[in-house]
Amino acid sequence: MTEKTILLEGIDPVSIFGVNHINFEKICNLFPKLRLIARGDELKVMGEPGDIDLFEKKIEEIMDWVRKYSSLTETDLNRIVDHDQNTPLESESPEEDVIVYGNNGKSVKARTFNQKRLVEDALHNDLLLAIGPAGTGKTYTAIALAVKAFKNKSVKKIILTRPAVEAGEHLGFLPGDMRDKLDPYLQPLYDALHDMVPAKKLESLIEDGTVQIAPLAYMRGRTLDNAFVILDEAQNATYKQLKMFLTRMGKNAKFIVTGDITQIDLPEPSKSGLICAMQILKDIHGISVVHFDERDIIRHRLVKRIIEAYNKVEATQQTKA
Image (tube, rainbow, N blue to C red; front, side, top):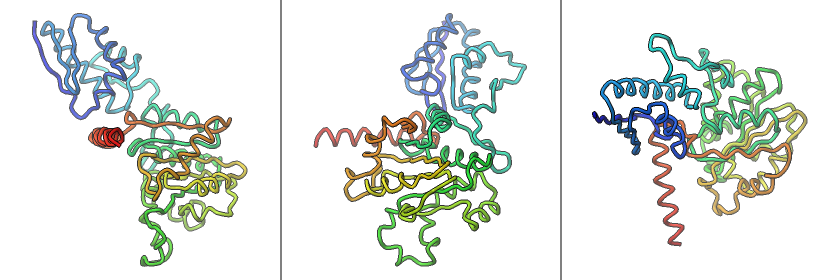
């Protein structure tokens, strides 16, 4: 009997083995002649050399699949294992998760379970709360949905807003006009739009007010009709600010509120309006709350580990307190 260790380099083991190793059990069943042991990002394989060689080729195909499609189902596993090496391996429905086509034909897709849930829930609800840590694609997916709605003429304008809490009350001391003062705090929203709308077109849409990017305070007193409206970093909105924002909803409007309740920058974090809204609105028909977690992180693979490490430290500190 031969033994070999395979490293899952650059891939989160959970994306291969599944939550609670549900996919790992299926992989074991597909290769009954081998004994498999999964530990972290290492996969130990024991069996006959020929069987191990075949398994190694298949696990490479599985990793390539996950890198490409960011998901792995039982159907995917069966197709990969039965796949003929001489034919290309593609998703049966490669377009099904595309939200919108961005610049240079780039497809913007829902890549994780909760991103797909956000897309699905947006079809049936006019107000969505997307809650979760950094790097899970909450805002990016929401902006893609807004661009899609605009391109489909479902709405006439896109409005993106954030609480400018980092700027405090000192915008008047910063150089430039109001847009120059606020742009650094709204840059993540511009970055996402630039992926999906050509630069000249986006500048034109901003100039004529079709696309509006403004701090949350600028929403007061408005009624937002025929608009796709996204409030980002909502954990930094107070109770009154979030109530004000939510009551701006006009006819034919879609609202998505995104935030991370572990990164509240308010002087008194307990007064975050997002935390209150999650409880107050959770049972109202037409409102969906989607909770993102570490499994949805699609930035560099280290981001997930960084967040997990900080969570452990913070949990320890709370226990001691």
